[in-house]
Image 1 (cartoon, rainbow, N blue to C red):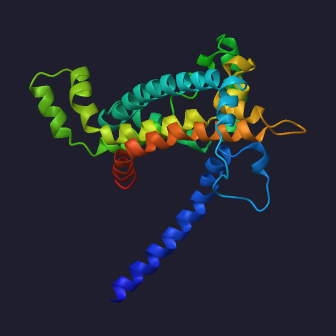
Image 2 (cartoon, rainbow, N blue to C red):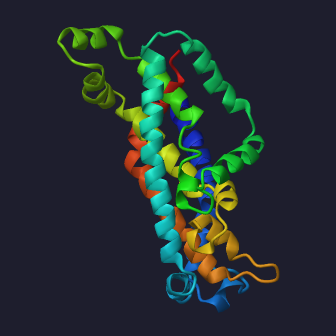
Amino acid sequence: MANKTKNFVLYTILVIVGAFMLFPVLWVVSSSFKPSTELFSWPPTMIPNSLTFDHYISAFENANFGQYLFNTVVVTVVATIITLFINTMAGYALAKYRFKGSTLILVLFLSTLMIPLEALMIPMFIVLKNLGLYNTLWGIIIPPAATPTGVFLVRQYAMSLPDEMIEAAKIDGAGEWKIFVRLIIPLIKPILATLTIFSIMWRWQDYIWPLIAISDTRLYTLELALANFIGEYSVDWGPLLAMAVLTMVPLITVFLVFQRFFIQGIMMSGMKD
């Protein structure tokens, strides 16, 4: 009986906290379907009195939302593929290969986590400019592709794989590349799913680096475009809310699809060692 009471209180608190956290999101979604005259009406309404899709139509027709969405999808997908490729190979090598300087390389990787991003902006921009990538989508994609967090997560997960399994594959005649592709990749799917979610979130929501690397408004990502809606003297709230809702949908979808792998990957990589 005591446990039932305790669980009831716990669930009640969780429901209240969950509703409190979801309220701003639901408010934005609801307001994006309200006519402009109802956005600031008093008393405010949670459910629109009259439903309208004018703000969504305006976002596509007048705010060039389709172009910004295309730029963001290209940056997110390509950057995530490069991030997975680089971080998986680096993390696996640091977990399973012992070579001279491997510990030093790992320490250098982890030490970069302690350097503030702001301190790296100027040298990254100088390198970007010298490579001729300024004001291109590649300039947003390439510099942040290799992340110490991703290397660390893959390494921690790969450490849990038994060395005997890799040795047995070598005895059976499998080469290093075949072992990596056919044996290791399928076994580390949970952490790859976790890294995929992280990478998509990082790239989709990134604002500072695209702001530095891009000056052409035709190459803007959604985050830059959203900020562009906020003027010095006025804010076009209707299309801004509609674009904010459309920006959230892909992230929520990705998380719902990969959430099982996400939880499993975090548990395996964060709690071991």
